[in-house]
Amino acid sequence: MKVLIYLGAIVCFVSFACINSNSNNNKQAIETAGTYLSKNKIEKDTLCQTDSIKALLNGVWAENVDENALFEIINDSLYYLEDFENPVGIEIQKNAFVIKGSVPVKCEILKLTTDSLWYIDEFNDDTTKLYKR
Image (cartoon, rainbow, N blue to C red; front, top):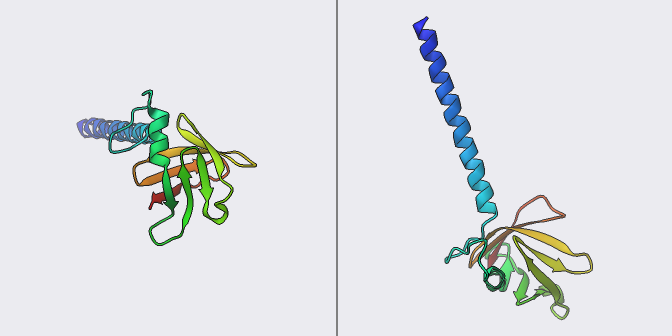
């Protein structure tokens, strides 16, 4: 009988530890997705957030170092390399940027550093991972 009580206590303890661990991992993943990452750790509620995000977004973006660049962002404009003569406006929101083309596309930023941009747009469930050149 004592063995069953001990086994029951161990099972309860292990179950609680696993649930607590998963909860902490999910919480951390959610916090990471909503936080912009940079060398200077941009905080969510700072007044300079929009300017800091714009500064980090400026540059030429590609899928990897071996691929051709997809686009370049300069200030409030996105230039597709296939049609560099016709820039598209972009707007920075809390945790996203909106590409203001003929059909506006909202892109939720998951990670933004000085050399990487990960986002999910509203038409695609997969994470787009880009790297600055």
